[in-house]
Image 1 (tube, one colour):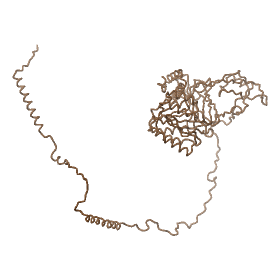
Image 2 (spheres, rainbow, N blue to C red):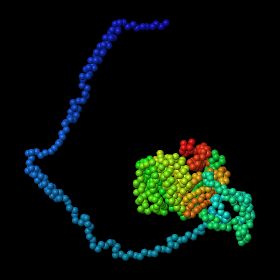
Image 3 (cartoon, rainbow, N blue to C red):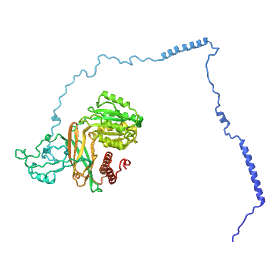
Image 4 (cartoon, rainbow, N blue to C red):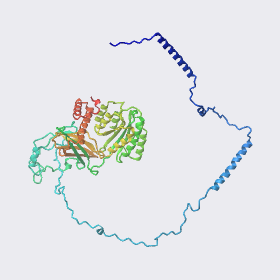
Length: 596
């Protein structure tokens, strides 16, 4: 068993501890008092001597001549000063060195002669004949690889037979059925002999985008008996001239279209394509003169910082107006003002007035965009001249109609395609939904400043370069009913030389041809074109990720089309279709919070 030990402190030990503590306290107090009286300044005497002493500042209040200095002394001092200067000047003159004579002018030479002046020059010999220098080739030219046959017969352009005109007839009809082709093939020479149609047929037109516009046309029954028989007693099917059929100019030869298709292994039902339409040649489809108005937002929300760069961009834009164009400039805030009462030509006087008008713009007032855009519809229109409005704004509306969808839908209905609207959002905080859809629904496009206000002049100039040369106005693209193709955008813009027309489409797998018609105006001439392009004959590798963008772009443009339709109609069914498209193609819905 372990023993416990206890320590016992006696009373004597406690007493000694108390005494030791008291002595320690007294000693510490003494040292503290002694330390307080010690001078802790560590500066030496040498350092004190180096320290500059402070002296009292002397202030000079006035200067007076001492009483003992009289006027005679001052005159004597002045005379001494005058006597010094002449001697100094003379010394400088004596020490200067004059240049030698003739150093600045060359020596005169009388009757100068050069070596060889007396030698007669020989006449040049005539050149040898070209045949001696380069004898003509004697090789026989021979075609080694024949790529194109030279026996192809010339195909003549055929026109449709003269029909009784119907006011609401469509611009195109479907190809004939297999039964009709079989009957027509029996004649063998393209005549109407033996051709009988199965009565009448309803032909329905479908506009690109799948909306609206249906018209019925009664197809004629062609019999082999005709009052206007030819010399052989038979009526030729294509006997009319083009002028007798229509006043529309065919322009397939002046435009060219190319197509690129894409088919995905994940989408067994549909294929997709990208269609490019552009001018075939400069002499075939010339540039059209246009009417353009530059519209500047001068409300207070623009601020002087951004408006400064907008003025610079507008001055640059004047340089891109063609000599045959007409132009005007407008500014708006609470109301709209224009520089000229009507369209004007590009003359030096009008350019000077336009620059003065631009320099006078200041940021002030509220933003009434709808009223300002509606005022543009009052501009006079001239047949054959497209009208373009370039609107520069932040889209922050606070007066008049302020609902963005109402502004887009109402102006689009009023405009009805009369004016092509191009917009520029002047900052990252701009109302992108308003400026974007306003241009998309009115045959234009948007450009938004993404970095800083100093990019505004360059952006204005880029837009002007893209729209300065229109070649086909009022362009409409149509596809026949019965076709599975869907192409977007549904309302295409004018065709510009510096901006080719690009459309994206979807078709049902197995469909072999894309047939579409484009109608427009080249000046005062109405034009139309019909294209027949292969779909599956030029497939794209399904594993090529670069071409997957075709499918993506089609889905994006369809969603944009649905947004534009909803702003005009407010149809809830369009929102459902928008959701289905976004879900199927995994594409986000732009401005989704405004609809859902």
